[in-house]
Structures are given as structure tokens and as C-alpha cells.
Image 1 (cartoon, rainbow, N blue to C red):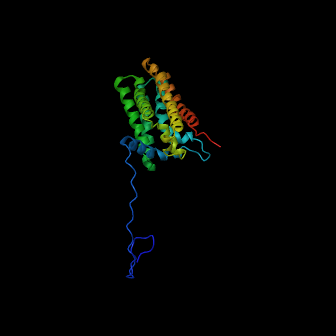
Image 2: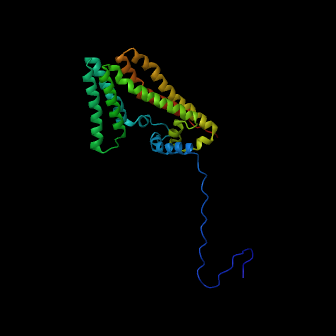
Image 3: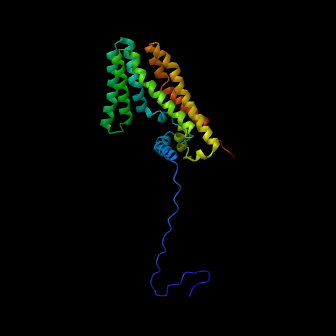
Length: 251
């Protein structure tokens, strides 16, 4: 006997009815390889971007620049090189001091068992810069590696804008709890593209100012500009990018 409206026969044997098979939820369509790769990058950046946001919803410039230790690891090797070379004009001594500072930072991270990624990148960069300067005998070549690094980041940012995955959207989107939803909103996508162009402008400004000093062999001025246009200018650019990409509040 069947219940009205139900074509399933009733089990009168007294046994527990069999559990109907669970339906497997439909799988989402596979995203294009390009989208998947950038989405993976976004997830990797999520932790960092969240740390950039303060409790009142503003950007934490100190955290965005790598924190006190990160800033010190970025700035001090170059500062020591500039000061020692300016005072003594001794290239070997300036290079030795710069490399020693990088080694100290690495040793401190090893002793404290903190992540080594930034310190290893720093000591590799300083060692390569010192090698180039020592090999050529030209102090200005200590800064040559930075130009190529800057150009690499600049190109990556421009490409991210061109393929509609602006880097600042990946960073700020998670910090603002937007995830990747902003990609489906033309206004938000446009805002993050503009924000990324601001950082591109920062990097282009570095090259425009520093490359002529490098070509002229103005080591002191080049070193000073490298410090001024390093963390301070980058932090200013991030702050402006954060402001211009803020979501528009609607009542």
C-alpha cells in the first residue's frame, strides 16, 4: 500500500528503513587555469593583507612595510654601506659592514626560530650587490640589483592590471573582507586597478630619479635617494592606494 502522493512502497517487514543514498552536491565548474593561479596567490596573500588592517578599519602601514624588524632588515644594510663609504671612501669596508649587518639579522632569526624568508632574501640581495660592486670596483653597482628587482615588480604589477587581477586588489580585498568578490563589481575592480597604478608610479619614480644618479656615478646621492624612496615612499604609496580604493558607502 502506498501513501497518496508517494510512489515509494512502505516496508512492512519491521526492519529499519534503508537510508536513501546521499546526493553528491554538484561540483562547481572548473575555473580557468589563469583564474585558479591568481586565486591561489590571493589566498597566499590573505594572511598578510589581514595583518595590514587595524581594528578601526584603517591600513597598518608599519605591518604593511614588514614591521619594525622587516624595515630594519631592508634599510640597515644599505644605510651602513652608505655611511661607511661616505665617511671613508673604502669600498671593501663599506661592503663588509653591509654584509655583516645582513648576517646578524639572519643569525638573530635562526636563534629565535622565526621565519627566515625575508632574512634569506635580504642576505642574498646584499651578497649579490656586494659581489657586483667588488667585482667591478664601482660602488654604485651596489645598488644595481635593486633596479632589476624594482623593474620586475613594476612589470608584474602592470601585468596584473592588464589581466584584471590587480595586485592591490589581492592584498586589500581580503583585508576588507571582500575576498575576491570585487572582481565581479566593475567599480571595485576599477578602484583596485587605480590603486595598483599608484604603486607602479612609486616604482617608476624610483627608477626615474635613481637611474640617472647611478649612470652619473653619484654614489652618495644615489644611496640617499634609495633610502628616502624606499620604505617611506612605499608606505606613502600604500596609504594613498588604500584611500582611493575604499568602498563607497551607500545609505
